[in-house]
Length: 74
Image 1 (cartoon, helix red, strand yellow):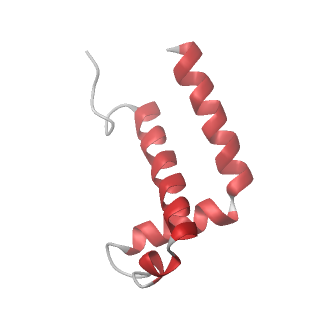
Image 2 (image 1 turned 60 degrees about the vertical axis):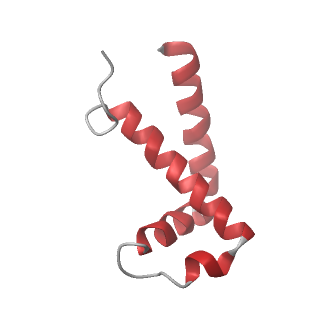
């Protein structure tokens, strides 16, 4: 039985990586969409986009490792 992403650490990491990558991609297409919400609850998406932009080599390595883990280890 598969538990939800909150209780499964690998699934939680996958969701966080997807959120970071998605926010960085959206910000590259439409920067004003995320830049107007830098604070508050929607500020989380702006922060994820900043992490994806500034730490992109590390995020890319994490995505590759996670993909390898999901495809070949599980």
